View 1 (cartoon, rainbow, N blue to C red):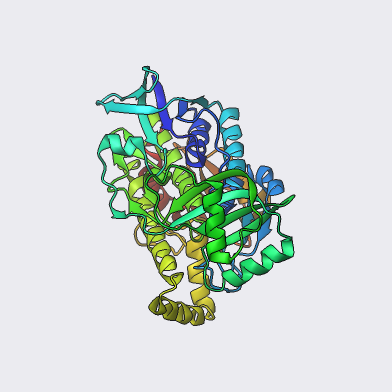
View 2 (view 1 turned 90 degrees about the vertical axis):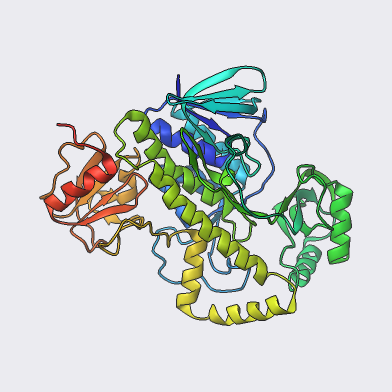
Length: 475
């Protein structure tokens, strides 16, 4: 029997597969498409996702393939500077197209031993107390102990489970594509700059050799949003909005997306879980979608592995929903707010002007940027030190960097006292005795995803916290 079957080979599914394989979990990923998509639905990684790649030793693969940009101005496209002194070693956006992210994460998962089967659509599933049976379109069945739906906003897994997906339907649709433009670059730039004074859901980003990523409002809602627009439809909308179609031709791909905002009523049904867009969809403003899914997988991976390996304490797997559904709800709220601020209605424009004034205050700007780049997240672990529930940024130690010690996806006790012990949990928690001028607490206990679950220097207090996250001691 397979340990975990993942439905969907996008960035969420492949991140999850890699995390599970770090713990020796037998993983099979199935995807309905026979080849990876070349559609560039996302264009970058925010700070927390960059940290995630760093924690697993992947950042050196990503950095040469992307470009770094400041994080200012991401909230509703309102111009604002990058806040000073952000609590991260990566205070930038890494511009990198989604197909490249998909490829790098897939390569990592395969290196670790994940099995990927393409061209297989899930058509049905059932579960019992021992596992999940997945029915595939070719008539075969696969049996696994757990199954995770990472199969997008129209998730078959979610629908098979009958999990509600309440929210708002698409009201505004946008056309998207990579096309060649004959117009000179200076003309394209000038027209885009003028149109974006009033139409922020419009743009043309140069990719080189005359090819641009073009975004334009659609004329209305398509009968079937899964059907890509035609080149003529895109050109017509360019003429309508910008007064020119820039001589667009030779599309590499064309797509459309909407502003639907929905959140799954629950992330788990027995042995089946949801992650990424299968659990939440929202407008793409702020570029948070891919990042949210990757971070879902980073939260879920070690917990599901602990469940499969048999050492998970009670409630650990359910904490995935508790923590990540709240994060998704916050992202849905901030994207709703951003969409309102991008409306051309007079009332919305008045609020936009007011928010623009508020962003001149450093604390306001920092607060909103930290939401977008996801370094402000704090899970509720109860009362305690101010670090409790937060992820710990990468810090310098005498022996190197903190994130260099987290490659294997294990828990970590960073002990500046040299007096503490994780005896009984050595198979799950690394004990690192080292000091850092950037850490003003004697010791911290980190989960495999880097969030602080304990801070202090009392051994008995530590012994009370270890079982909560890492199960019973082995003696």
